[in-house]
Length: 356
Image 1: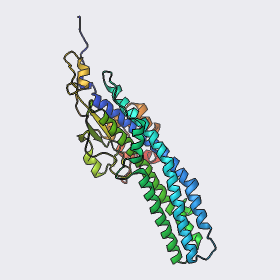
Image 2: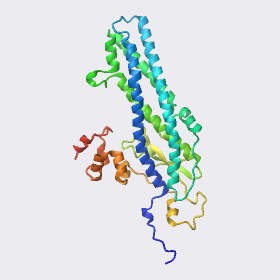
Image 3: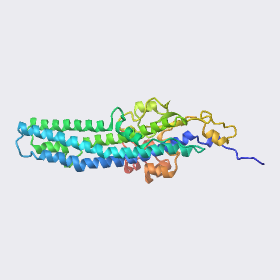
Image 4: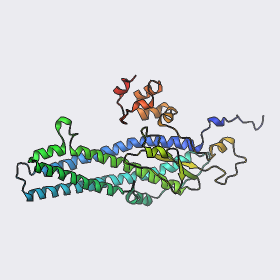
């Protein structure tokens, strides 16, 4: 029986590309949690700094006749406060994005190295390269600083428009403040500033996605001797837009082609398509069949979010859904589609349990 080996069930063996795809999807779930933390940090800054400064400048004119001069000074002070606040937001956000980029570059190389059946060291990006990428590479057509500058300018126009409406309707400053801040009855969700928070959240989330995908793309290109192409993955978007749905599962040239994010709030990503042993120039005549099959160069199959989640262990499912929702999912009482309503809103646990 010398030289006998247990037969390898190739149908059950995952390729390197499939292993990397699964790990990147899991990482993308953790990234959504990181985005939430970053949003809370920036919105908290908005709440404790910009909003009080803005309201202080407005209430300064309460009870006073709004002469043409005072109106001009009020509008200019609104513009100055907003410009300064959005500049400070940028200074809060950019260092975090640089740190994220440094971490992401190491992770993207390591996840491929760990999946390979042989020891290979992949190239990683230098810190200056990542810093330059965060500061000066556009995300969805704009630099991060341009997004925040434009957001601040647009906000100044909206605030000043509310002031001019108030003047035209003979309102006092208190009424203007209520429309800008919102009302206590509606927990301040009906004011202009509430819309600003939602816009800031969208910019932060998209900036994080953009940095991750830019760093990921550069890492893939730096390892063109191992990676042949990239595959678009929209697994996290159960309500994928038409553009991303068309891209999902498609492979694109390593150096060219569409890349996420394609729009505000886009959660799509890409995964590498690693070359086969033959494409890499290895002689695999004496290579074990399992290693040969693992590096077959085949593109990983497209999976839906529900299909991917079903194939994961309880730990990953609980990390994604929480303990109680995982129980509902694993028991088959609810499918992943049941977790989201027709408007794309994630349902609460109480709402989910009412569906059973």
